[in-house]
Length: 379
Image 1 (tube, rainbow, N blue to C red):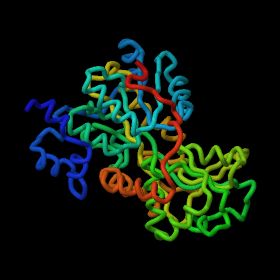
Image 2 (cartoon, rainbow, N blue to C red; image 1 turned 45 degrees about the horizontal axis):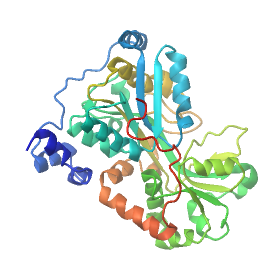
Image 3 (cartoon, rainbow, N blue to C red; image 1 turned 60 degrees about the vertical axis):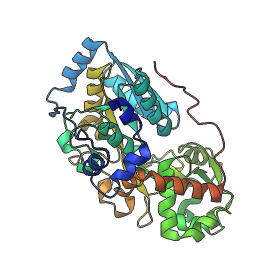
């Protein structure tokens, strides 16, 4: 059997099942007989400045394509605008789609020999481990790599977390004031019936994990009661926030945000004192044999740089402390920070929870919010 065919036959479920509860490197090498999970590529930490890499990227051609997980194109505007302000002559193309489509899209492109992105940046954390195992990533340690929190980077530089994303519930603070719910537990009481918007938990793995945490904390009785609350479910984790901002609902579940809210916004993302919420590091990596390697390196250096990370509520770096009375995200015991990556590796458990939520809430309805992008978007 050819190596390529052997690699292709290693399914996500088989690979990830082998890594649950043990070292990915040890378990997969035993199961599949591979010795190349730990890359042989040398990856010393970058010593060039951003401006030096910028010039190298321009000399290379000045183009950069990123496949980014998200709900709609404008969700990455904050990255586009900041990057273009810093590096105006780079032709940056960020293609936004659900991570669960981008991952198989990259696999398909790799198999067909027409890889479009230079960088992949996704919520599907487990895929970066599989891609490293299959030698589909370029090992690289950007400047500041040593400052990234240990579990937010691959030891060989195959991937690193680009940013912290946290999911919880949101409320209309203007409408509710001191009457806003402090915990998701009370949302099943009946008092909030018809007033709740939510992303489908069986359409987004992060929302699924959040609902899983709620269910394991409050019991299946809570889940059954939530199914009776006339919740407005939509695709896209941004939709609960939209419902709040547009004054359609009072509470939203399963969306990202920050506890630091602007004064002119009616939306408050809730950082619970003891109730569960979730957070993770959105992983980014340079693809194997990227067409625009220097531009990809520029992005990886910039995205974990002090100048970018200092503007985030929570940083992936240990040397940047959050403001506004917050602590590093990994210090919140109720953030389930290490639980989400483990959940993502166990695809059987993910599937069981997806189907459980489908039983309670019905099948997912509606088109994907980014639209249908096809096989080779960004080409």
